Length: 119
Image (cartoon, rainbow, N blue to C red; front, side):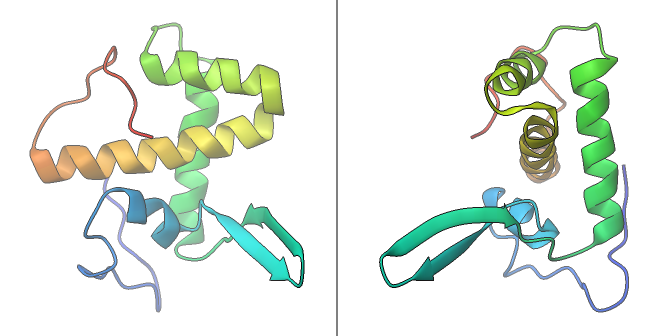
């Protein structure tokens, strides 16, 4: 999958030094709300490329619903779906997909279905 950032969302080497920062760049991490004694993680930030975020979410829903091939990522996602619901689990799987794909691009390795997913 090759996506080109659109508009003002230009890819920055500094922003993507490690694979975990990819999810934040795409907008798949939770926003933190802090005020006085209140401190909680809210909805996803939705920063970055909306089209890329949508493609990752769609891929995550396919992993959770249509795929019959077993993988560590799918197993983790299905367990998460039981605890927190389908949509939140799909966002979490989409985030992990982004992290895994960035790590694959950096290392040059192929996808390992039964490898432990990157947290």
